[in-house]
Amino acid sequence: MIVVVEGPSAAGKTTWCRRHFPGHVVGEYQPTGREPVGDPAAQASYWSAVNAGRWAAALDQERATGLAVCDSDPLKLHYSWCLAAIGEGPAARFGAEAAAARAAVAEKRLGLADLVLVTLPPLPVLRRRRAGDPTRRRRHFDLHARLSEPLEQWYRAWAAVSPGRVVWQLPDAELPQPGARPDRYDLAAFDGLLDALPPLP
Image 1 (spheres, rainbow, N blue to C red):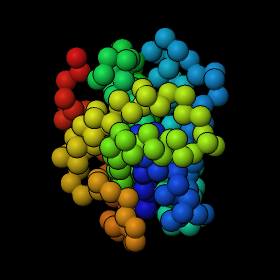
Image 2 (cartoon, rainbow, N blue to C red; image 1 turned 180 degrees about the vertical axis):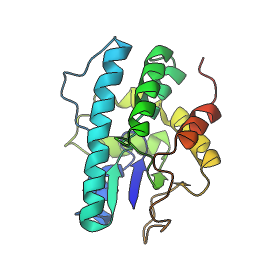
Image 3 (cartoon, helix red, strand yellow; image 1 turned 60 degrees about the horizontal axis):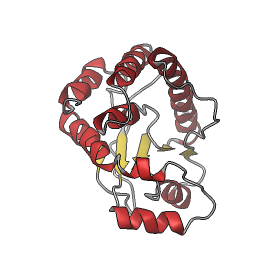
């Protein structure tokens, strides 16, 4: 089974993954400072390759241990959509990344996780956790905090299209056990997600 853990910056994703599933975690992407900016085609190509690499790592982890727990979604398409939804990114970037992601899913280089755990703590909790973690700078915290609402919209659309896939908490005990879903590379499910999203401004 491939599990994704999602939420805004300082939501506690990394801490939860490491505490409950050491040895199963596929780490989140670490910025390099060399990510392309401003060219939607270049951004789409870059992020498609990054995300496909994380999906491949999840498959490797699943083969080795039976379970992969991804600290943030390898699909990661929600990020450019959320930026566009709050007016901080162009819709053209999301369009280019959606096309690249769809092609990667069709080629089975990128897939749809079997289970998504979403945590959306309120802003005061996020600020408190940020202040209590001196090991991470979180330079874009304020921007990322604004993405909570569209992030919820994204995964509510996903929950409507794919019932049972999204769980709105990080469980303290055992994970739900849906097992590997047969639609990891289902383009109809991918298209259904995009169609279920609210229109961008």
